[in-house]
Length: 358
Image (cartoon, rainbow, N blue to C red):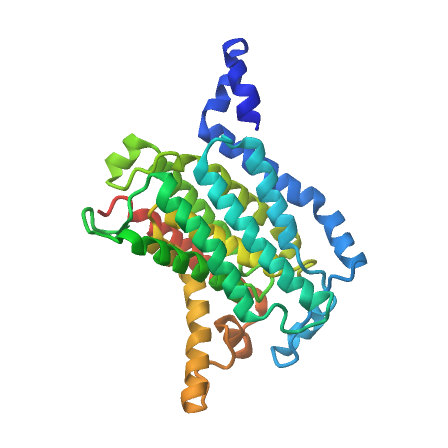
């Protein structure tokens, strides 16, 4: 919006020419987002307390979690506001890539909101039935995948990191593949959101990593130099990703151990969907699995646990997702969280190194 109204005035006021640059608007969006979440955090937490939006804690989990009962939840709504408002403020409103990513994110946030509402307000411990949640994710993911397939102008190839020319044209199967990536990413982040700050940390590192990837993909000369797909307009996604990282950073001020507010499904499902759709637009689906390997491991631990128990009656882990396994082995919650953050940073560095290893 600022770009739309202020940049045309640069012919009269030369200093407004800075709005032309994605880098300037990315920093502006990030600063706006982090201040938005940090300044509105106390008001939001107080509002959730007054509305009795309090976390429901499982009795069969680590006993240390019982003290978390009554902590306000649905903090993801604050994150989404910190993403949507600054993104609309600083983006080029004509950019389709950002609109697709933002609307997909908000639609997944809506699914998470309904789930949280049923758990917290209607006192239904199961929340929104899993099949309805999945149907909603697939439908919204299909709409996003269709518009990416038709309108964004990217190829339908699946590209592999570490190889310059290794790619497969998915054709029409690009749409179901994209849905799989988006839905899988959304649910993986949601499963990771089980400890104070655990999901937020890797989300920040993945967002910053894909911010760099999106900017490189959107710049034709950089993309050609790095031998990566050039996606017209993808650079504008750097603004969107900056707001995700910055909003999560501002939210972490209140979500760090011991948390004053929890993210809830409204945040976790939306943030996972956002990372998934950006990976599809920028043709970095495999790099998402590498950069977000923490999320992948968390999701796989649940699948392995369920499969093992149903087939053999035995559990592989003390409890799934795997972060609870480490807790039950005696690791303090902050140690689990920080060690997962460290691994996430390492994975981000490995992901970025693939830009030169092709």
